[in-house]
Image (spheres, rainbow, N blue to C red):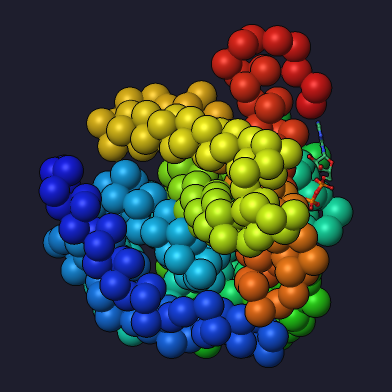
Length: 385
Ligand SMILES: Cc1cc2nc3c(=O)[nH]c(=O)nc-3n(C[C@H](O)[C@H](O)[C@H](O)COP(=O)(O)OP(=O)(O)OC[C@H]3O[C@@H](n4cnc5c(N)ncnc54)[C@H](O)[C@@H]3O)c2cc1C
């Protein structure tokens, strides 16, 4: 479904209304106690907006990446953060594009209502890092099951999810002619797996529920396989553009939050007999970061429009992620600087958002690798890897 400008404005308004129920104090408290923002996620689930990308025939809203981006942008434009629940939007696409009809009918309607939570996406491993063709977690077929052994790291929300999308090796690396093959995607129900799946939380720089996973003879039914065995990398790469656009949207939301907070504070705080924002040393960094955030938003809009028209958008999606994450970080620094010492006081929320927004330059993919994509795949320069 293609939403009109009016529909999009209505979506923004609806998200703002939901977010207004979760003010600064709510997010400060979940940050202080390292709690999962369950109340917020429940509210968003009930509203149906978390299922915006699920087609209507499977119980979702059937909207596009443009609208999904606006939803995440508005969440981050509020005191909140879409990271708590955005994985469902990214990961669901793999099931939608490559799952069987039976899998889609089994899972999507329940994901849409929130009865089943799909919030965990397990790719990264300690020894492979960004080089995903080197993943070594093994899934070996035995009769009607796969037996999984290995380790994953930084797997977010595994404890707040029923389902997990897992990328695991089904053919040993040495046996492959094409090294990008040999990995397979599984949708596993973590409540029902046999064997031992250990989930150990990691202590991170901000309130993010990420974990190390240990798979010890974990048994999953063979029907958990999505699509064809060995084609998993391809299926995951298919989802990357949407992921880049959605992450860019969160960064844009953060960027706008920082710019507005900074401009307001700089206009009100009086030192040396005038508002500090009258000084160009304070004003210009805020104005510059505003220009960069808005430019990133234009690139994100272009990427999302192409995506929703079914056109190639790898260049725009990667540029949007790069520009938005850098602009948000620039705005974060301008906001922190403008607040002086108060920027470091938790009650102003700047330091919390500052810690949160730094992630977008690093994950889900590092900006170095985004630049490598632009340099190598868009500009045709020689490959570094
Ligand atoms: C809070 C958080 C949540 C996360 N959530 C998830 C999740 O839910 N699921 C999941 O699967 N993963 C998740 N990740 C993992 C994230 O995607 C990885 O951190 C990322 O893929 C990079 O892997 P790495 O950390 O091992 O870095 P490395 O691959 O070790 O890279 C380290 C540095 O070297 C640079 N580098 C490496 N190779 C090159 C090169 N060829 N050219 C230039 N620079 C290079 C990188 O850009 C980076 O700066 C999360 C990470 C964080 C921090």
